[in-house]
Image 1 (cartoon, helix red, strand yellow):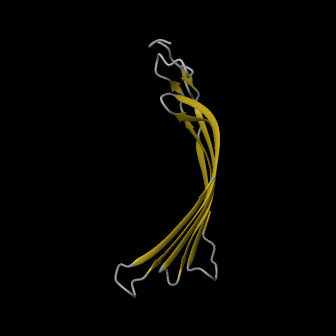
Image 2 (cartoon, helix red, strand yellow):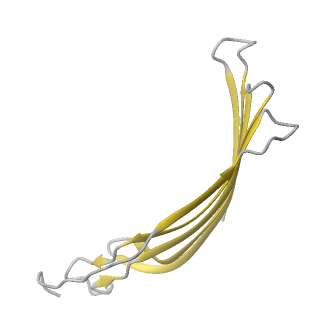
Image 3 (cartoon, helix red, strand yellow):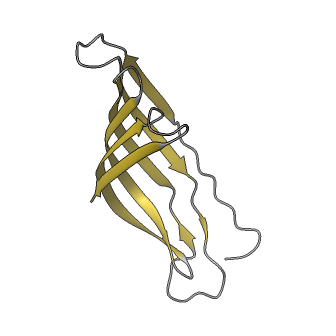
Length: 134
């Protein structure tokens, strides 16, 4: 590999988002949204003189699916957000002293609730958050 070596990496990326605000009897307001997306990170060159790794590494593709909801309760003094997501990496660019490619999958669930307690003390609020990742 020399300084004159070159590679070209190209991809089409995009994102589709759909959302709606249904009227539900048990919330003040609700937003439900879902998205599909494709991301891309160009490949490249590892440092010269590295005898362990390939001189080049491949581009990374990410396919993502997300669905979530935001809800308000109790006269909008409480808010709950829930999200589920899945990421499928093709040629994920893992890095140590050099970059190498591996396939990877990640999924997760996240939940958050926040309650404004301004009737107790001005500006006071409480929040709880939980997440599961794999």
